[in-house]
Amino acid sequence: MTRARTAIREMLSGAAEPLSAASVFRALEGAFDQATVYRTLHYLEGKGLADSFVLHCAEHGTERYFTTRDESARGAHRHWFHCESCHRFTDLGDCQLSDLIARYETRFGVRIRDHNLNLTGLCAECAASPAD
Image 1 (cartoon, helix red, strand yellow):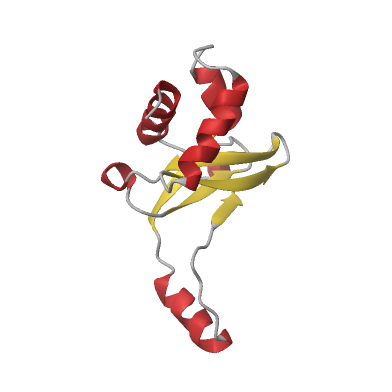
Image 2 (cartoon, helix red, strand yellow):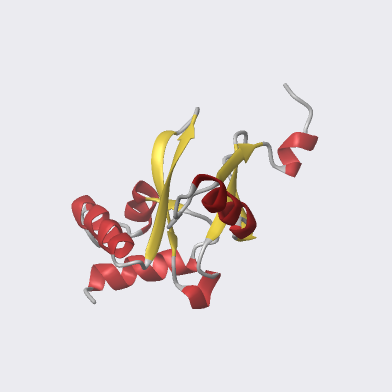
């Protein structure tokens, strides 16, 4: 594995929340150019070593965020909550949608191979804070 792939995979594995490509690039402090970071994230996702999702945020715009698929670090598949106020992510843990997916497959005769669930709203801390 190349130096860039190793560094970015380790960064994703150690991250407490999803990282945008821009945040990965900034955190690497010039070790790799921007194109290398984007190509590497795409490569890792294509090899099943990373997952990504697109998040639409009123303050930050639309960005793709990446998480590890390193099963020893985080588990195979996770879901995230994004606070619209403080913009922190909360890891909602392992996927709990297997029963719902099975019902969809039975009802519609489809075979679901992948899914993505990201929830947005206010975290407990922001919800408890008085509105300005």
